[in-house]
Amino acid sequence: MTVTTRKRTKSSTDTSADNANGNSEGNDSVNSTVNAEVNPSVNRRVNHRIHFADGNKGGVGKSVLCRTLYQWFLDRQQPVIGVEADVNSPDFKGIYSDVMVAQFSEDETMGARANAIVNAVVDAQKSAVVNLPATVYEAFRLWLRDYDILTLVADNHIELVKWFVVTGEFDSLKSLEISLSSFDRRIPHMVVKNLKYGDWTFFEESDALQALIRETQTPVIELPKLPVRVASTVLQQRLTYADSLRHRGKGFGVVEQAAVKSYLRSAYAAFESTGYLPSI
Image (cartoon, rainbow, N blue to C red):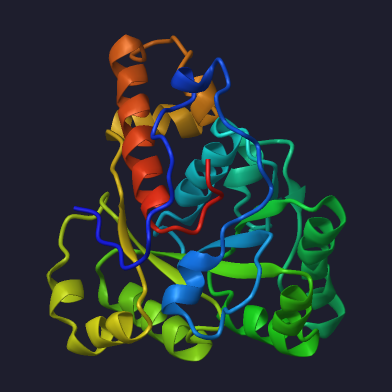
């Protein structure tokens, strides 16, 4: 079940195949009133957002979330910049070859490479979807501080958003708690429960984390699970989600295509429920 504390945007949940005729409006403007209702620090106009796929550890599903969110923008014909910031495991760029590359680093001489993200959004006047690397917390924090990024993006009517993927395990949830505590309402978070992992007892029984989620009014959504064979084929064949709806090969036919379509429909509905995507 998808849980959200923010006003829903009006949108469809069609997938790539359903959008072949193009019914989206392709509007750059993002309605910011949903944020102002629950986030007193965001009482301003927001034209674009930079969506960070985060999780601060490897293997939680950041790149899966990133690719799915990026495909949402493509399917909805919304202008978007894709950014691969995981230079050691560039699964995002390996599949969506058109995305640009940026890098976060605690080394001051290399940390400036992340500036390309904001520069691109300002220059192109588009939103962005960024695939963050593992253990990026400190480099990300230093980047915000050294370049006064939060002030800069506010001046340019841009909002940073973290889509934080969790597995239900202690270290994953601890990373979420640290991120929520550190950035509070300055950077809205979406908690994304990766349903590839089945035990959420610790998440549900973590009183401190649940209190923090309520205090920051952070939406909690679910990223549905693709069957292992389907997900493995998509990754092995380097298929975009749009390509996977047309792909035919050994062990991959209409049933597998339908599984991808169902996955996208559920994921898109969860994304749209947060109110942080462009209105359609």
